Length: 397
Length: 200
Image 1 (spheres, one colour):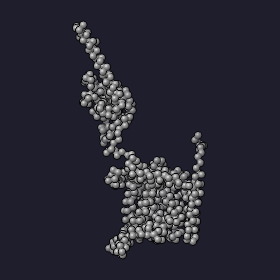
Image 2: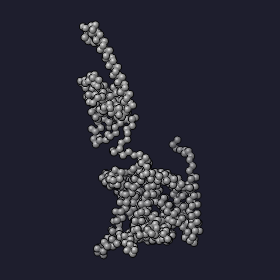
Image 3: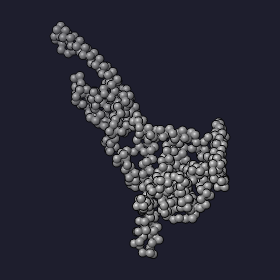
Image 4: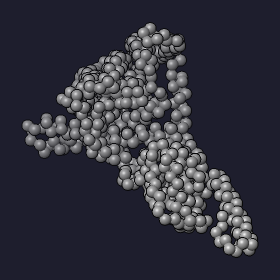
């Protein structure tokens, strides 16, 4: 029995131990640098691989939702499709518009990708598997995440095209609007955990009562926070139904219309990597990070649980993309400012009340009501806004 | 409440997703190179030349009257009339196209050539495997590539082809009857007037 426990622990920590073993062969002076490289390189390999798999899963999943097969030509069941796509983008001509601001046009995709990779610095992928345990980790995450907005606007502005500029303007409006509920939705977790460190937040959730974990999503404020966070994260990563900045049917590809070849692929990848990062943050904040969903499953390695949860969230993203049509700009803004923002603010209050009420069913009842009633009332407010009227044009009649 | 319709929609897409794995009827996609749909009778893409009998050159119905060339709106047909005559499917000597080219990269599939042809020699094809790696020569069809048998025509447009066949057969019978009466008349006239050799 003890052997099995030791084996499970060894499997859980195998990457950490391997890193320490490798560092043993390096002179002491070079150890910090080598340690950083050994932590960063796996991230830079694993997540682009996950991106490649996700593009295939997405196309397959969307196909099945629309009763199609999806890609099934390259390799068995189309499994080699991502490789074909990669070769295609690498061999395509890289066209830069003649009037573009070449330097900014070149830097924008690089900034986007590097900003989205920097998000992973504070994500605990497994037990003891985090690049840096910052004591302001959540803050760092959102600060770096907002760099992506800069990259998007750089791309849109430097291309000197009306479509890219329209896309960039929409992107800025949307991302800034949804940054607010995104951060506010995560504050409830910080209030409860009393720490901005992602490692501390996960450690707090990785305990069990009986077989049930203490994930924050299993509380009224945590559930509301999780849903609000995921909606804001969808908008933040420019995914359907919030894909106005790149709306393929209206402004072609939005801010990256003027990109081709591998720079286009970098944009594509940066967006997905960013989406994985925000999903990873949702997992860290609400879904217990690397902790197992039941205490008797804790012997399975922690990193397995992280990636399992990530894949589930990716599947939900794909499912939502296959279901919902694109929002209109005013609907998008109404949702952010009239529904999400008041909900997140009230959720802060709920979390506070939860903290100060005595444990037991009474606080469950009070907090559930505090989440459900505003949700119903605010959504009714959204509904009553739908008034169709004949629009009169003053200048073009 | 907000999200009710979203959940309904999500249930619908989930049903489609899992249903596509369970029932094959949902997947209507035809896996093209391996599977092919039956060709639709009313479809048309580019013209082809009909021939009767086994030999495409011998049985060619086209007599190079050049009406289709003149009528073609995008001017994609090019015909050169032959100097000599060759017997057509009925054995009657006729001119024939020495050159008959259709540039299907120019053709707009309007079917006007088919409408104006008095000999039922040009018809619309339904073949869609026309992609080529040579965008000039590969899309300029000469008369050999354009020629397709009447059996093929009957296969792709059965209703239309049987009407054409009936009409042609009727015409042929009428001509034969006319020829026969003419021959009989000639016989009688030669019997009466052996001196005159030329039939009028």
